[in-house]
Image 1 (cartoon, rainbow over the protein chains, first blue to last red):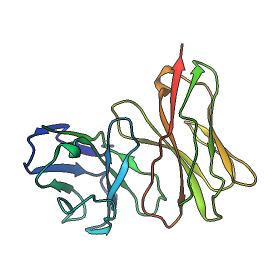
Image 2 (cartoon, rainbow over the protein chains, first blue to last red):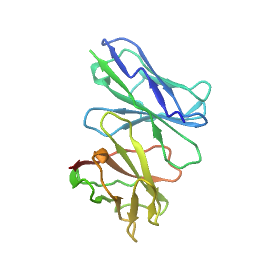
Image 3 (cartoon, each protein chain N blue to C red):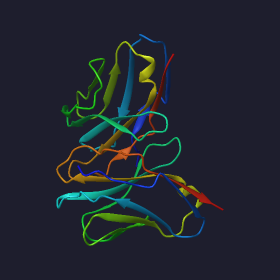
Amino acid sequence: GAGVSQTPSNKVTEKGKYVELRCDPISGHTALYWYRQSLGQGPEFLIYFQGTGAADDSGLPNDRFFAVRPEGSVSTLKIQRTERGDSAVYLCASSLSNSGRALFFGPGTRLTVL
Amino acid sequence: DAKTTQPPSMDCAEGRAANLPCNHSTISGNEYVYWYRQIHSQGPQYIIHGLKNNETNEMASLIITEDRKSSTLILPHATLRDTAVYYCIVIKAAGNKLTFGGGTRVLVKP
């Protein structure tokens, strides 16, 4: 079946602009995660949703970052006033809530802030 | 969650078994060992996980020592497509997030 999809695959923006990154999880997966990965580093946790609510947003670096999942399926990661340091690959993952921690990751969105 | 230690890199020969070590000496009784890998330009991929018994699936085998302080991921017949960064992660059953370390960069050579 279809895996996790993320759009766009690449996003180039200018410093100070607002961006939205979209994640479509695997159908039926109630848990959704956002991670950020800088070059040469392992993925860094940002936020986790169980259903519509953010169960853990402790990884969001500051208040410029916000994520929503209004209907418990698609999620959008929103970044305001982008900075060059926000450049990274943003990864989304989903899982069945009762399957332990076998997360299924999407291909990521590569964000470049000029 | 317990910290893990992995070698930063290793090479292995195509067709041979690849044995990837992971040290997790501070693991507690309710923590699982998970392995993921990340092929270049792709998202991480789940491989296998275990608590204390050895586990095997179509991708790999996981051997956990009796004291649970270390484990080994075994790729039985490495192929060039197994070239990737392999992450060993320890997490409580009730934990909600995976914490990735640096992983082991595995290069499978012909």
